[in-house]
Length: 320
Ligand SMILES: [Zn+2]
View 1: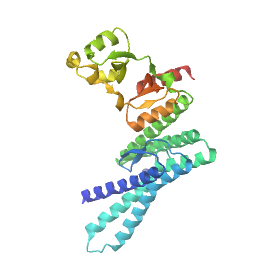
View 2 (view 1 turned 180 degrees about the vertical axis):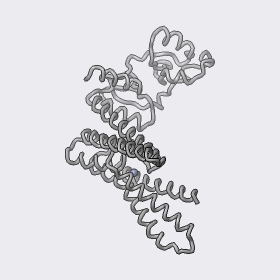
View 3 (view 1 turned 90 degrees about the vertical axis):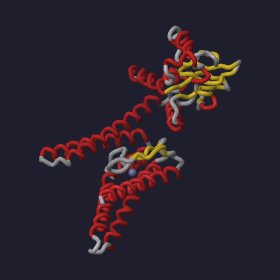
View 4 (view 1 turned 120 degrees about the vertical axis):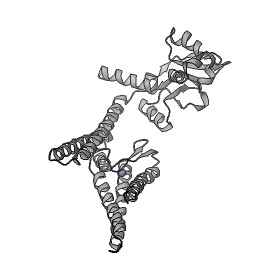
């Protein structure tokens, strides 16, 4: 019976997430993955919604699905006869679970659904998405602390169930902080372009060069970190340190650059005057760790996540 309840809870959460996804897709906001967790999911949306109203509708869709499910289970529960105690209990649990899901998700702390609704409202009033996000993530942190506090208070009173509440609070606090950092980085990177952070002047190496030669002659002695792999006069791929590390050291003398490189046709491109934040989002959407920086059909450099992180830490140190 516990298994049936667990499956029903799982299906309920899945339907809730589908509610978000359907609306998100309508606004052409890509949903990368759906994360299910104990008390309902936090759908991972690949990019920021285009407007406050889109944010509001995407956020509210999940709780509305849960609410409909709760109403449905409630109606079905009344139909259960006294002769079927087990079936009735299952339905009662499913109903309870859904109501708990709705209530938890409606807490106005980002990134919970209620927090997204809160952010959408502040965004609509202030016309400032970053300020709205900051307020909503602070609310998320506050509710996280509150849950931790209440949880431990319960534990001290002898109720070990309080540990779960504290754990959920910790989770919420972390999620809110992570979102808060994202906004901070976005603010820091505003106005900065790809050309400022990219690794430029990638050295060109021939396609048949072995990884051993590349490491000995170019990386250890030359200090280069980014290479264009050339065949004849044309560039056919890109080589990164990360790519070399994926090949076992023993195979370096027999593996050619062409075998280990990222082929040109598989690389996503970006122009040097694009905003860094836009480039990061492009990497996220494509699920890649670097972009080829091109202008007028010429490779002018490479932008990796490491490049952006290094640039961010420089910006932070300078207090710019
Ligand atoms: Zn939700």
